[in-house]
Length: 327
Image (cartoon, rainbow, N blue to C red):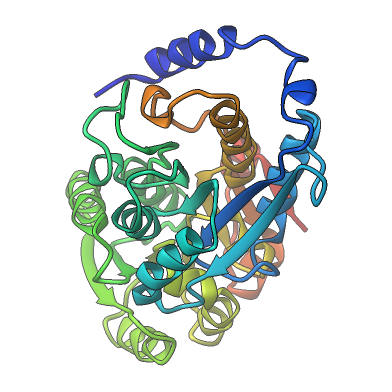
């Protein structure tokens, strides 16, 4: 597996090959159609979309003048990705920007000709054969979800003095779940923590999962970041408060909705960088020649208001490590 230093070297090499300034004259009349295949609605994904658009603007693109976005969301139902990807292809998308492994797999199945940029994937080898030179029509960014799973348990151990039993809550259909479970169990064994696993596939499953978690006397839950969890983040945060169970998240949006703590990649940065890949492809680079890159920005955010509501005293050492503390 390529290390982060090698990823950064590859990025610099790719960036150095591009002259600046000629694109506007060469493609003045072209209006690019960007198809976005997403897990949640535009409203729920607003922060990432702002980052994507700002990155394009910085490279000289003006929405509705030389590009348009056709946005399609699975809206909880991951089985819709296949039909939505096919729809974007029929609508003439020049490129498809997809979030997550299921969406990217669906896009790749729908077309072998339209370039695909994945804003994040937990398992890049589900869609490409090589990290350095993916080949084919797919490139983009890894989200290191499996690698961070063990770090989240370590943080929960620091946060909760009596932490001895954790539950992981994920959609069991996620193709990247086995690698995440493996990482969690390895970390739990080292920390001498018992692991429970709850499968959530529809909105109605969450309350039942929290009831089971309370019955199982879990000390904390590590929540997956998938179509079903992202779409129900407000409900999840409410249930965590109702059942008084600390929950660790992997996406900033959950803490913004009132969740306790998040350790994850900075998704807005991945969207900014995805726009750079879109630009390179528009200028003629083959997606298969652009390496799959790792995230370079991570964030630990703690919501002290939620911690107080759960009667959790956050250690000063953990607060000092946080990138942001929400009062």
